[in-house]
Image 1 (cartoon, rainbow, N blue to C red):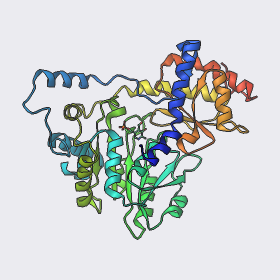
Image 2 (cartoon, helix red, strand yellow; image 1 turned 135 degrees about the horizontal axis):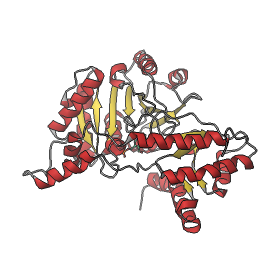
Image 3 (tube, helix red, strand yellow; image 1 turned 90 degrees about the vertical axis):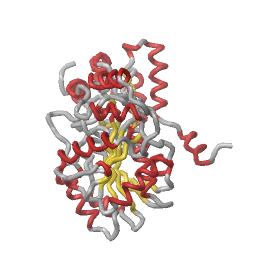
Image 4 (tube, rainbow, N blue to C red; image 1 turned 45 degrees about the vertical axis):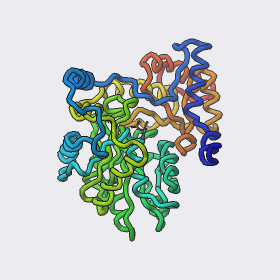
Length: 396
Ligand SMILES: Cc1ncc(COP(=O)(O)O)c(C=O)c1O
């Protein structure tokens, strides 16, 4: 007999997964080229060459015990390399002990939340946000507190302040953001730090950073370590090296963190007791060698530009994303997200309603799809705008 908790989650299902199935159904009916499926954010670039090179080197020169158990925090050399990289970026002196290797960002966040939360403790999330956060927080009996961001998807500090209670243990930030693509500025990070430090108890910032290397327009993402004291980073190579199936990432506790000693130890213990034991051994070696490599970010930027032009040229509105893999377009006035989704589906254009990110009035489109799909969809955007009497902003 399964638990009532998981039974309820099974019943609610995932809207994104349903769209994925609908996409497959339509592709069978109309052919791959005639369905414009922007619903799933699956990184589609191949990993950089350093990944295959290191794998070959490891396979050709095996060392005894290379597949064995290890310290729950991971290989010392990998953690030291990450600490050195983050020290150089932030100007702080970070020790390998700050780092714990994890099974992707998902596992990193579960390790951190398990380490922080007592039953009923509150975690603030900024809407729109990646919906798995709800599961991650509830896994450890925490309470999700949703705070809306502004129309520009930047933090609303007044609303965050109003949401803080004596039970607030943490706030999750995600910049570059899924689904909005915004990047928080140095000023915003400093302001968040000031607000949290003014409270009468420690509130940890969990900085979820899987998109930190997918940044466009020549921008850089400010290092949270420089601007926020009580912060734990959750990083993953799912997007930076296009390795989502390999499940490799890390946590890093800031040396300025008031709970540094307790938190670093607790995360390593949580990594073991939640069942990961340690992160995959081979992949720790690979990421250590490929630490400064990245997927072809210009390729994603090109596709972002094409999809963004389709949306705004047809007459719709969207904040141009500076990072990540998504465009969060505005649902046209007078329509609910589901009504707009239905109009789009008539033209075989699939997108995910904002409710899936707890922010209605918007739709998410992932641009990590083939260029052919993006160029092919231009006509569909224009036809949808015509059906809704929305004036085009450019020629087809
Ligand atoms: C914002 C965000 N956080 C965390 C994750 C989970 O990443 P990982 O595959 O490393 O577990 C994702 C995956 O898409 C994500 O979009």
